[in-house]
Figure (tube, rainbow, N blue to C red):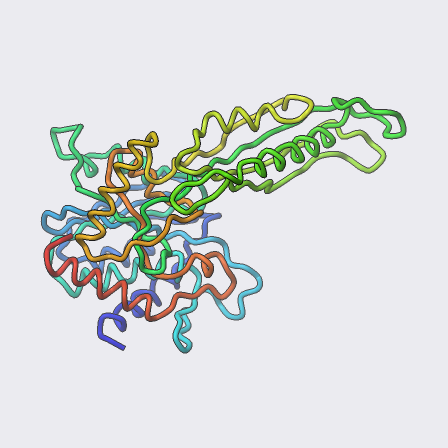
Length: 376
């Protein structure tokens, strides 16, 4: 292994050992952030606590034109792990540990490259990506660190590169994401009699679900950049009392992932209107715009600018992806943004999560080249 990969694995071993599961997101300004501070000598470091375990560390050396963002929070560990998920294991061609792929592996590379180079570099570590709670990035974008001092309209950085598992390719486009909480109201009663559509809240929910699945199937012809159709999932249905009691209440949580060319507000209203009986409550709990953000013409223009930057940095360009990333938040704020990181999304959120060593090596070599040449 190269010295850069050895250093990366040392940092990854330390980062994996910190419990940054989200939920519960019991993360403070010490712990993992003390470790980061200690590694980033020579950087101007600012740690900001946005509450509820949402913390950022912004580190700057020199006058960089790019900002590298990576989240440190992980999903909760699964009982199916074969060993302690907070102890990094290097076995064969892979490093195994909670968050190793998504995406502490990239964080470890950034630390190793920061220590191996002296070129301009800007880093933003955050802790709230895994819970659809964008207060870290939203707070950063409202801070003086995101804009040139004294000029609210001019971005401090030329572009933002967000680390997520993309197999070492620059991803220029991905779907948006929207999450919804919906409640249905019925009338409790004995289940032996004939029922109207509005009597049972659970029947309303089931009918709505069938209509929603039919609507989604009808969108399969839609296309953008290699992506097809509308992604949709009913994640939770809860309600009722017992089999012989008409359900007086039901709750549905669902999510969908539109193409960049789909209008989120119209889709939301379409889902609200499905079914025989209007829901008693309909609330969008999270919305993340697609990447790139903007109308069709604006999104395409931003995609081309991002492609030019990836080409300049000699980063191979990959296909659009179905998963959502916080690169969309930077894009919506006017930044050129793309996604680039080691690992494969297929290993993210899995038991015995792992990242390939050759992916870490490739990512480290590319970032070392970019930073050491002063291109960051």
